[in-house]
Length: 250
Image (cartoon, rainbow, N blue to C red; front, side, top):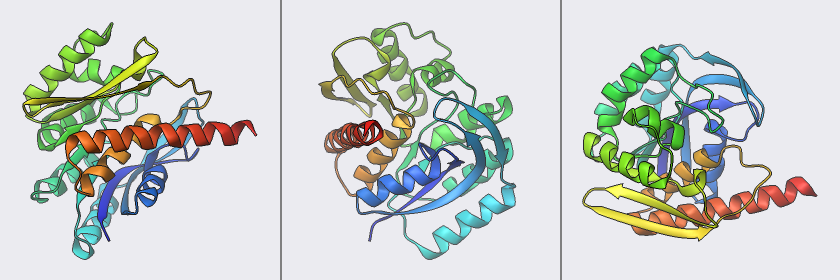
């Protein structure tokens, strides 16, 4: 059995967060071991409240996971508090040769802040330098690069700068930009990988970034190369939201 660790918050709507990570991993035939950083109250549209777990509780979860299971990848989602950023960074430093995929849950797709300012500073100092792959949305890309992203060219240049800064790869997602054909890229490590697909118009898309990031984590954990992993992750995410939207209409 392939094992991954998912470090993230609980989403009460069950559209994103730690439970969604586990569902995606299950679909890939992977056992996901969750380490919960915070509890949220939220709908499909808004995060209403966030309660961070005490750092010793997060630390104990992580210690138990690595004591009992050999990990093929680690996915980071919402960390929220500076204390839990520090606990996570200390944990990651000891995970040698394990791919670390960071979904920097900083700003929601609607522009809502999902982290404290102090925690954000610590993430850029302590978490991102350890990342193998970072999967920001458009607003997070702006925040992490301190650049205004007005179009896809801006986003591509910002992603390249971020990859160079942290010596890792960046997932650049095309969904925030215009066009009937969307292009998703993995940028960095001396290569640029592209996967194209038709734009889907979904009434429900909550958690799409989380699902794509976790699907990519699972694909890498299974040993696929970056091109194969991106293709598998994109195809899974499209099929996933096709199914969800059909079921919600019925």
